[in-house]
Image (cartoon, rainbow, N blue to C red; front, side, top):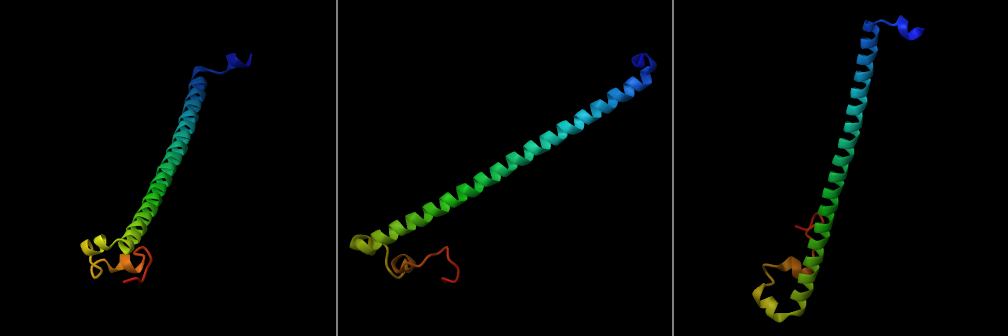
Length: 97
């Protein structure tokens, strides 16, 4: 039989090679999982930033609308200091200095 012809040294060699291949595949799978989770975390951070940016723009537009309509607010927030809100300039667009 073929199994009887292989000595203990060969068995240990094949067992060690199998173990090494298993470790390599395990590390490869862990690397893939780590990469996917980091990508999803970065994507979530970008989406959170975009949503907060849009909320900030919506809040600024809401303030702008109420400043233009309410004379009491215009007294509390003078036009000279808050000119961008009155004029409708966007701070997030370049070259609005």
